[in-house]
Length: 235
Image (cartoon, helix red, strand yellow):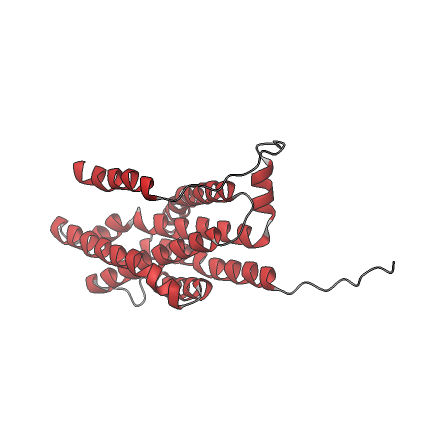
């Protein structure tokens, strides 16, 4: 518990080093919900929010049942299962620290597409190519690194969206992540209850990755489309 508190206290101490916020002139207050409507009405922001929910759903839908999947399908011991979680968590930590450097060199949208393609191939081949403990470890690394990288990249794109109400955008981002985190285990759990197969349940979760790829592509494509020029009216 103390180790968890250290970075939080460091974060609070670092706030003092942040530059002061610009002074915004007082304006007439509008409805407190108008900022959320404005943010969600933006096509690009809306697509990113949907993708955040999908990333969280994939991660939570995979993570919640991974222990039961490994022990039931591969009959691993508690020590091996602990090693799997430790190794996968280490890879996720590495991915989270490498993600900012990658986004400085490559387009975040393309990174998301590549990451989701990898996650999709991993989950859709569960029980087909992933049939051993080492393969399960590689699959865990793929899902954790892919969803983590995608989640960070989507949040960076939201911060760079030049929204007039960035607070509302980030609040919606948090809500989207929480919503996906709740629906992910529901989807995988319902699939597991219906099919009785962990492999089939993971393949169902894997179908969310192509949906995320299509959503991010359409949302950023529409937002980047040039607007038609309007001729000046005669005076």
